[in-house]
Image (cartoon, rainbow, N blue to C red):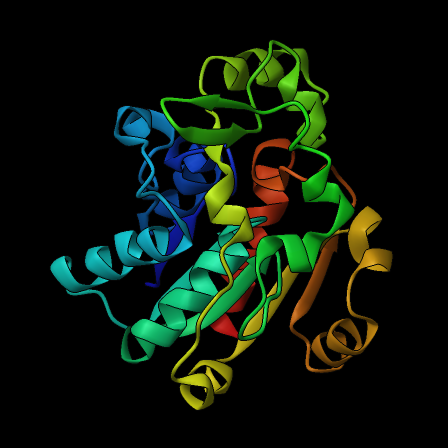
Length: 239
């Protein structure tokens, strides 16, 4: 039995992993899908203090208080920034890192640095609320922005997506324990359509090492292809 900690991306919450979590639990695995501060059911906690560092601390605290070790730590999209920081702060608790169509940062990079025009494009449609700059403002068909096409899934997402503080995206990642971070085995589950936009050397090495899966679906692959995503995560556990 493996222990998975599933970290969501921008504008989402732990809720987005429900289909995958059900499949992994049915296979006997232990699954945690925390919601980061200021998002999802914790949207009421949004404020000027919410940034990348706080989101990293959210999950580091979970690992500590639940006494989790050798976890398979999964990050989707912006969650790639978060899991890299978690690995830096709690390397002794992380057994594998899985980047789920996610950002692959190095020390000193922000999501703006990694994702460039894609994430910058969300800023003009944002707004400032109580002094907090928010982006990824939800709208009824927002699921399509994340590559979701099923109308039922889009409706489900419309009730749950929340705005995301811009500060999280522009704050650089600070790593102080890089040797330990990069010693943790890394795996990549990506959408076929995004492969061309990724670091070719990183992807080639992951493929050669048997640590790359590509799924032909939209960016929110945990929603659009939960079975294929769960299958890949299961293969990570036994690799």
